[in-house]
Image (cartoon, rainbow, N blue to C red):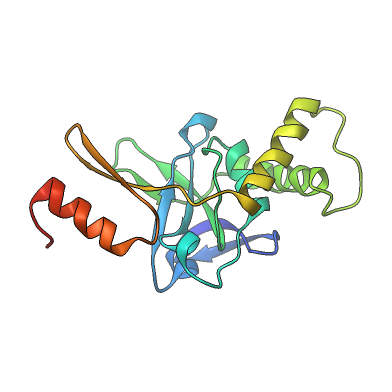
Length: 180
C-alpha cells in the first residue's frame, strides 16, 4: 500500500493510499522522471493515455509535473505523484514523505491560481517568469503534439509517431531483427 497524490483530469488534487497503479487500469503506469526537483518523488501516467481516444489531457498536472522537474510535454489522464527511493533499494515507488505531502497542495494551488482556475492573484513570491512558464506548459499540455516513440538498441535509435503500430513493428524488426 502506497500513500500518494493524484491530480484528476479536472485538475483536482487528492491524497490516497493503496495500489496507485489501479489509477491507470488496464494499461498500467509509466514513470515520469522528476529527479531534477531533488525531491524523493516520481510522477506516473497511464502508459498509453496520450494516444487512447477519450482520455482528456491534463494541463494542471502537466504544470505541476514541470515544476517538479518533468520535461515540458502533454500528459493525459490522471497523474499520480508518489515517493521514490533509489538507494539502497532497487528504484521503486514509496509513500510520499511529510515535506512533499505538505508542499504539493501549495504548489497545486499556485498552479491553479496562475491558470485562472481558482480565484486570486498568483502569490507575490512567484516570479513573472514562473507564471509565464506555468501558463506555457499548460498550453503545451492542451495543444501540443504527442511526442514520438523512441526505440533504442545501443546507439541506434528509431523514432516512430505515437499510435503508428506498423511503424513500431517495423522499427523493432529493423533494430532487433524480429518481434517477440
